[in-house]
Length: 285
Image 1: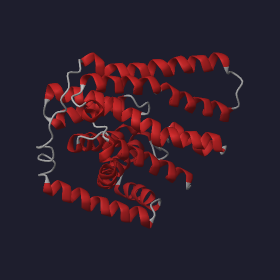
Image 2: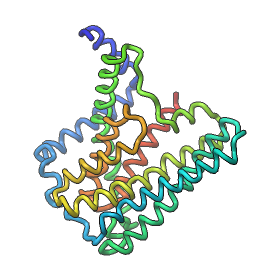
Image 3: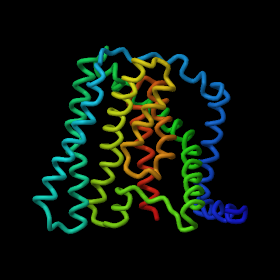
Image 4: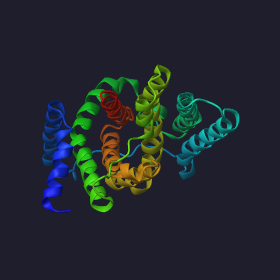
């Protein structure tokens, strides 16, 4: 790939951005630079982040994820055997309903483990309703700061893909976003929006930040190594490897927000707002 081709690709990517996108990105860069300067490039950002006190055995952290996979697999097996003649849009509706139902055992077991193993129970995990207003505002600021880095990861992935696979390379949309575009039925879209913005963020943050990252910090102690390892675990459970670079950057922000605040609501809000932006961007096309 020569310089002119690189310029064309960057112009193509830039041409898809609106003035609002550019303003938001510029604000995010400002916030990110301010954070980097204030925290010595992030090395001092979590000096005051204590470990969450718990007596959780290592196996307990895996149980919610196992329950999630097992329940969803059973429900999908039943669907494939009992509901073979559904129209495509109804199949998408059932798939998202399975997602909502499949996480129920994972959430239930995760909360039970927190009540049993964490000091201060659910509050020790980071689920304290009194922090919601503060976490929502801080979550917006955290998302604003990380978006330029996420966009940079997406651009680098596109550049690498075009270099390796050719000029026709594109990053595929997430399955749920593809279904929103493919099926105009309000039932499908409403359930996808609920699943994407509410169900998935809460469940994934409970499992990957609340369980895995807390467990890692119990043994590693230092925050950043635990955040990095938990972020790797998070991305490998997402099917499309082309999404991994951007998801890893987002996961670092989610892990940082959890350690900095001690509240699980903060990464939940960041995750939910990120997904909401993706859905709104898809629907606005």
